[in-house]
Amino acid sequence: MNNKVIIKSPVRTDAMEDALPAPPVHLPGLLTFEAAARHLNFARAAAEMGVTPTAVSRTIKSVEAQLNVRLFNRTTRSVSLTEAGASLNAALAPALALIKNSLSEVLLATDQPSGTVRINSSYVAYRILIEPHLDAFIESFPLINVEISLDNELSDIVNAGFDMGIRMGKRVQNDMVAVQLGAVQKRIVVAAPDYFRERGEPQTIDELLKHNCIRQRYSVGGRFFEWKFEAQRQMVQIDVQGRLIFDEMRSVLDAAIQGQGIGFVFEDFAKQELASGVLRRILTQHSGLDDAFHLYYPHRKHMPGKLRAFVDFMRSANRAKTR
Image 1 (cartoon, rainbow, N blue to C red):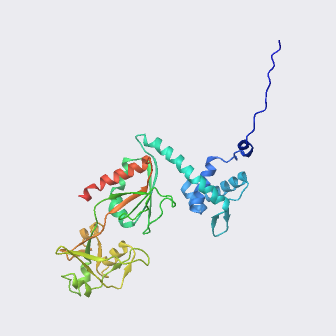
Image 2: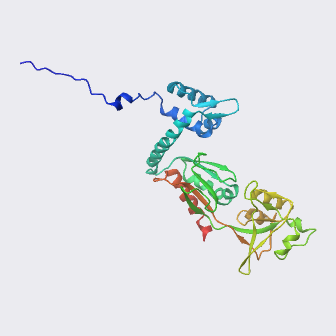
Image 3: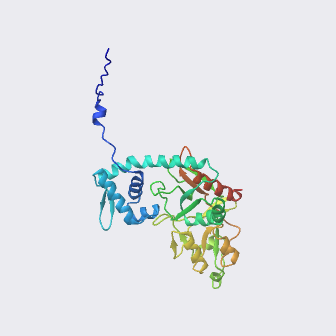
């Protein structure tokens, strides 16, 4: 009796007929593409990845050749995504973020979180809340690198590649987690001792109208910081005047040190200058309360270990200031 084995061809479905073989693009190439697409600048993408711009350009060309499609429009002055590049980036960026978060979860389970924490902050927030504790953080977490970018804009930290931002108040996007860092900031009136050599020192808030006050805007072309004071359990606002206007508090502080006028700054920000005597607080019976700085970051199901370490450390280091 003969046994026959009949081999039938597999039934082909429409999905199988439509399926295309996966192109031979490896993860390093995709990571390079995502960095270049995010920065739209090969040099900045190279700096982030620790390679040369030439290496980034070569990798992008290789990916384009493997996919047989142009992903970037490149000129001597600019880089932009083609339609195909934009489509690939829209699908790829969330997938790579998921991979990075999965790796972060593994690191979270270890005793030594590692990686680079990228922070976008105003200079004032950095100097008051981060700089005094940065050495201690680096010593406590030797496997974590810290990259800090300082500006006054409310940046889109996700698109800009940051892990977190620090700004005044809670003015952040809805999908962000905001955590108060430090106490509500108190504003005080300061001036250099030399400023009063030829002028009388103001004894009341109204007398500030007779002086050259250094004003500050929230941002370029934005509205002015208001000079508001608590006086006899009431809020008093005064419309001061002056010849100098800045959009950065450290410039206000520097101008006050040089005797160019009277400044209205955060007490915590001027501590060193007050202690050294280059600035003197005036109208000591009056001050103004602003808001507290907040550290904010994207809402995630699992926070990466490096991010958790930084948030917890800085909150603890600044906790005494909230009391």
